[in-house]
Length: 282
Ligand code: FAD
Image 1: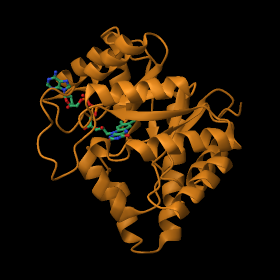
Image 2: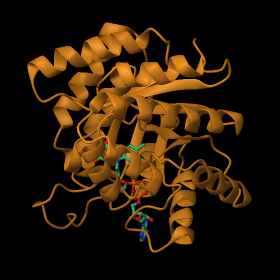
Image 3: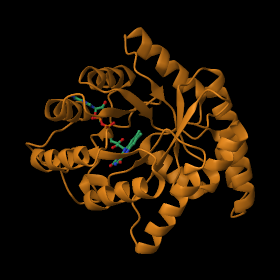
Image 4: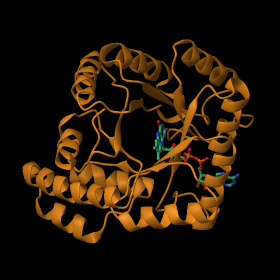
């Protein structure tokens, strides 16, 4: 298994493609990334369960094409208990034993979370444990810079603790650009007795406008100096990528020096940016 700086494992996240062509490209991307022997791949679940079948299909295709263990993401707000039960049993039958368990968000226009559905990720973790015992390694989300809907850092930490007490095995964080936010969050967790691995989610920088918009929505703070520098490049995408690679390589170096257990890359279905980062760190 290839390890970054000989000690840290890596994993990569994909989203299900919308078209046949996108699907073929995704499999090629996964095959390229398989070359660095990641610990696992993961495949997201569209808001409100909108990619239920595509997530399932993509997970199977990646496993078949690469042999790398692949974890489906699963969110609870758009799904009934019955459909969650069916999906879990289907994954279990396929030999899948890692899952990323989330509350998820409803797509705009879908209104309020349906009553009777599981409302928070800790309830989903509890449900998975009740239904499948210890079969799955359950990953949950963590937010070093605080989830945008949380009442505050303490409330968000209490929620994270509930997810761990419900049976989460490890966590992957929302991406961040400030290493101190991660280290502070992990310190707070350890003081609260939360001892599961907390793996930083790493977002390669490849496009300024999209990244700034997404960061605002998901509560990831882009420091002013990064915004200013990226803004100054306009549509010079080569400069954006070069600067982004330098910034994220340095961030990963600090995280590795600080003792992170692994790095999880949001690949955006592209092999190049994540591979460059892994190579820089190897
Ligand atoms: P939760 O842990 O349930 O928390 C949601 C909010 O509710 C937080 O503000 C929390 O503090 C609060 N809260 C929790 N319990 C309570 C309570 N009892 N009372 C009051 N407030 C409470 N989204 C997708 O749709 N598909 C994906 O595949 C996907 N993958 C992701 C992968 C990672 C690694 C991460 C970090 C995020 C991912 N997301 C995905 C986004 C995620 O679904 C959103 O961030 C969502 O808003 C919260 O999900 P959660 O599982 O963290 O929710």
